[in-house]
Length: 265
Ligand SMILES: NC(=O)c1ccc[n+]([C@@H]2O[C@H](COP(=O)([O-])OP(=O)(O)OC[C@H]3O[C@@H](n4cnc5c(N)ncnc54)[C@H](OP(=O)(O)O)[C@@H]3O)[C@@H](O)[C@H]2O)c1
Image: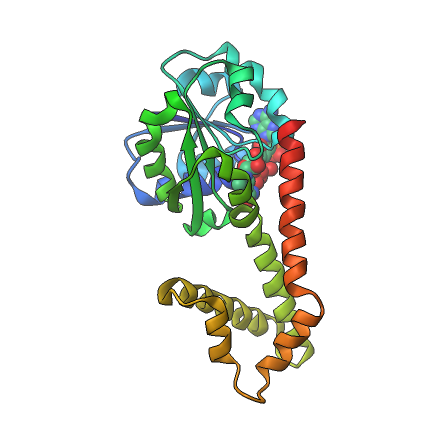
C-alpha cells in the first residue's frame, strides 16, 4: 500500500513515527511533501519517507492521502489534490474544524476519513477519534490500525468531533501549562527546576492512571488525598476560590467557539 503525507509537521511526524516503530507497515511506501525542505530531509533520514517535489506527485502515487497541513493552508493544496485524484484513492484528514460537507464541496463525493489525534501521539499516547463518510467506511479498519500505532482510537460520530477535539486535542496544552505551573511553584519553594518538573509530570501522570484504572470518581479521589485539617484541602480551596474550574470551562468554551468559527469560515 502507498501512503502519502501532505505536510510533514508535528502531527504527520508523530503518525509516521508510530507506523515506523510498529513495524507493521514496513512493506508499504510512505511518500511525503512539506513546504520547507528541512522537514523532508528529516522524514527521509529518520523514517525512510520518500519525499517528492510537490504535493501533486504525492497524491498521484498514494492510495491513502493524509492531509496534515494547518486549516489555513488547505486552499494552497486543494488544487494539487483535485488535479491528481482518481477514484481508487481515499482522503485521510487530520485537519480540525472542517467537516464532511466541506470536503464534499471541495473534492466531490470521495471517500474521506476524519481523524483527530493529539500531540501525545509523539510518544504513542494519543487518544484519537475517528469517523468516515459513507464511501470512507470500508477504509476505517486500516486507518484505525495506523492510528493505533500512536495510541488508542475511538469511533465517534462527526457531530461530537468538535467537543472531542476541544477536550482531547487542546487539553494536552492545558495539562502542560498546569505541569509547568506546578514545577515553577516547586522551584519557588526550593526544588531545582528539573527535579520539580519531573515530580510535577509524574504526579499528574500517576493521577491520570489512577482515575482510569480505579474507575473512581475524581472527587472521591480528591477526598482520599485530603485529610481533615490537612494541607491539601488548603490548596484545593485556594484553587476553587481563584476560579480554577470556571477557568477550565471557559477555556474549553473558547476552543469550541474558535473551532466553530473555522468550520463556518
Ligand atoms: N497539533 C495538534 O495537537 C493537532 C491535533 C489534532 C489535529 N491537528 C491538526 O493537524 C494538522 C497539522 O498540525 P501540526 O500541529 O502538525 O502543524 P505543523 O507542525 O505546522 O505541520 C503542518 C505542516 O504543513 C506544512 N505545509 C504548509 N503548507 C504546505 C504546503 N502547501 N505543502 C506542503 N506542506 C505544507 C508546514 O510546512 P512548514 O515547515 O513550511 O511550516 C508544516 O510542516 C492541522 O490541521 C491541525 O488542525 C493538530
